Image (cartoon, rainbow, N blue to C red; front, side):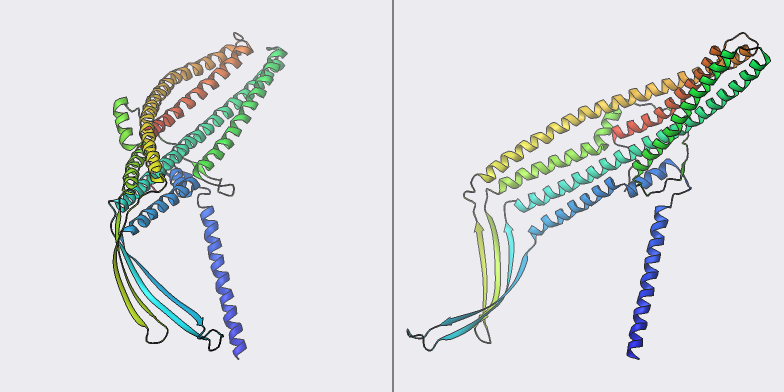
Length: 441
C-alpha cells in the first residue's frame, strides 16, 4: 500500500511538471509571435524596441547596479555588529622528565559593535559621489534609449519608403509591359519599325532590374527594422506597418533649440552628473589626509570551564594617516585632472550639440524644399508622359521620347517619395539633437 501511494505521488508530480512546462512553452511561443500578422504603428515599433532591445536591457541592469552601489556606500554611516566564537586545546608538562603532562580546553564567545563617529566628511563624500555616478548612469540609459528609438524611427520610415518605391517600380514595370505590347501591335500593323520593338524590350528589362532592386530594398529595410526593434533571427517577421500622416511643417529657432538641448540632452546631463561626482571624489581624497574617530564595544564569554568568565570593553580610537607612500597625493592629482577632462568634454559636447542642431535644421529645410520642387516636377513629368504617349501614337514622337518620358516620371516619383520621408527623418533628427526623442522605460 505504501509503495502504491509513493508511485501515485510521483505520477501526480510528473503530470503537474508537464502541465507547467506546457504552459510556459505556450506562453513563450505566444510572446514570440504576438505581433505576427498585425499592423504596427510607429509607436508600436518604439514600444517593442524599448521592451526587447538588448542594449536597453543592458543599460537598465547597469543603472540598477549603480543604485545598489549607492546603498553600499551608505552602509559606512551605520554600525557593524560581529559575532565570534572559538575553541582551542593546549597541553603542558608539570616537570622536566615529561611526566604528569596535562591539557586544557579554552572557549571564547563574543559580540563586537563598532561605529564610525567622525571622519571629516569622508563617508559623506563617498556616498554623494556614488549618487552622482548612479545619476550619470541613468542618463547613459536615456542616451541609449533615445538612440535606439531614433534608429527605430529611421528604420520605420526607411521601410515605408522602400515599400512606396517598390509600388512605384511595379507600376513602372507594368507601364513598360504595356508599351511593349502596344509597340508590337504597331509593328505588326506596319506603322512602327522593328527597332522600336527592340528598344521597348530593352526598356522592359531595365524596368524589371529596377523592380528587383526595389523588392530587395524592401527585404533589407525589413531586416533593418527588425534589428532596430531588437527582434532576433527567430523573431516574428510577418507583420505590416502603418504609414504616418504627412508632417506638419514646424518653425524652429536655432538659439531656442540649443537652450532646450542643454536642458534635455541626456549626454549633457550625464556629464554634469559626472562633474559633480569628480568634485565629491576630490573631497573624499582630501579627507583621507585627516584623522577618523570610531567607537568599539565588545562583550565576551571566555574560560576553560562553565560558567565562562564575562568581559566587556568600550573603546574610542582615532586613526591618523601619516604616510602612505604618496599614494593618496597621486590619487588626488589624478582626480583633479579627471575633473578638468570632464569640463572639457562638456565644452566639446556644447559644440557638438550646436552643430547637430544646425545640421538638423538645414537638412530638414532642404528636404521640405525638395518636397515642393519634386511635387511640381512630378506634375510636369506626368503631363510630359501623357503628351509623349499621344505624340507617339500619331507618329510625332520616337520610341526614345516615349521611354525617356516614362523614366522621367519614375524618377520624379522616386524623388518625391525620398524627399517626403527625409522630412520625417529630419524631424526625428532634430528631436534627437535636442534630447526630446520619446523614450520611457
